[in-house]
Structures are given as C-alpha cells and as structure tokens.
Image (cartoon, rainbow, N blue to C red):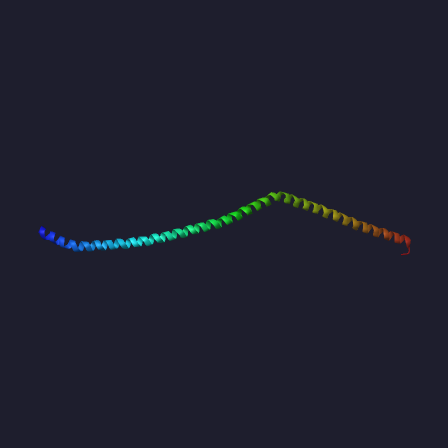
Length: 131
C-alpha cells in the first residue's frame, strides 16, 4: 500500500507539481506587474498632489500679501479716524453756530425793515396830514 501511494505521489508530483509551481510563478509575475502599475499610479498621484500644494502655497502667499497691505491701510485709516471725528464734530458745531447767527441777522433785518416802514408811515403822515 505504501508503495502504491508512493508511486502515485511520485507520478503526480513530477508533472502536477511543476505545473502548479508554474501557475504560482505566473500569478506572482502578474501580481508584480499589477503592483508596479499601482506604484506608478501612486507616484503620479504624489507628483500631482505636490504640484497642487506648491500652486496653492504660491496663490495663498499672494492673498496673504494683499491682506497684509489691507490691514496696514485699515490701521492707517483707524489712526486718522479720531482726528476726522473731531473735525466733523467741530464742523457741525461751527455750522450750527453760523446758522443761528444767520437767523439772528435775518430776524434783525426783518425787525429793522418793519420799524423803518412804521417810521416812513409816520413821516409821510406828518408831511402830508391830509392823507
């Protein structure tokens, strides 16, 4: 029985073992090729991501420079605002004072005109008593 089993294994082993090893070698070869394609795809993707990163960094640097300029401009405006606010308040105060003075002068002119009209009426009566 051992001899039959041994003979069967030897007969099977020569041709079938070589065929199996050949199939395993072919599978390993295909897996190696697939792995190489995946590695190339990952390398390409890595280069793409690095290029995208470089472009994003350069564009964000431009934006950051513009933001720095705007922040300096706004800081400059903020430093001038107290003086501008004071000047605006003083201009409003001066304008209000000028309007009051103008109203007083207008009222004085109207009052003077009415007094002169009354005096002219009295003088005209004295000059022409019949009228």
